[in-house]
Length: 280
Ligand SMILES: C[S@@+](CC[C@H](N)C(=O)[O-])C[C@H]1O[C@@H](n2cnc3c(N)ncnc32)[C@H](O)[C@@H]1O
Image: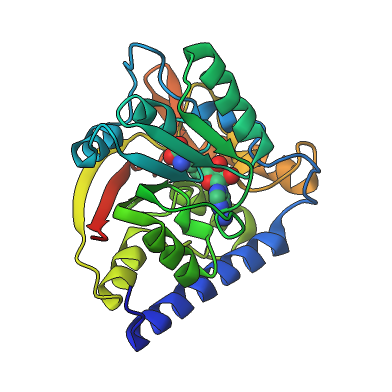
């Protein structure tokens, strides 16, 4: 990877945006609970069952790059949503995942599905020391990652054939920004997403290809109670706090019926992208 001056500048902007977003979060959030932040969310990142009816379409694209004897590292593998179906399609997967709640979900799925070619490593990507693989994938991890340049360089250096990154057009919590603004009266700083990632790759002069993935519904909830629970969590509030009580008052005006449930009246589906480049 050739680190150009433009890439250093682009990465500096990325890091500064993440820093400003985190500072803003800390200004308004309630005191963080002690538990792993993924505890209540890990089930969202479960792999599909044996029939693969809810297989993420990204797996079908990654599969086109794989030879049966290939090895793959999944960086920030979560509950094994991609690592486990991809393990069926190549020789071996190393799943790097720092969150205990996510690893518990993945370990349970590995046992349930009888998978024997996934190794789970309890580390961050920055700290892990493992050999390179043929492929490195990293799905929905980069948004809040800093410093982004060494992280990306490590992805690139660990891929003997190809790097594939999945991310959304807008930051993953984009549909909660309007709610944040109504609650706290301040424009929400948006984390970097696809446009900023594209800038970074172009500044690095990497020849990448993109695949548009399916739009995913977002800002939709099975009930008003579920909307309140999820919004409380996504705005980093503790149930019963003053901010959480104010949120409960303003939320009903932000929701409209949606089938059997509700959605934010500004809800937009999340557009997904797969970005991939050869390292050979
Ligand atoms: C939104 S989840 C995505 C999980 C999975 N890749 C997927 O697409 O289903 C983000 C995951 O990245 C992990 N993560 C965050 N920072 C990381 C880092 N620096 N190194 C490795 N994993 C990280 C989190 O623990 C979490 O499991």
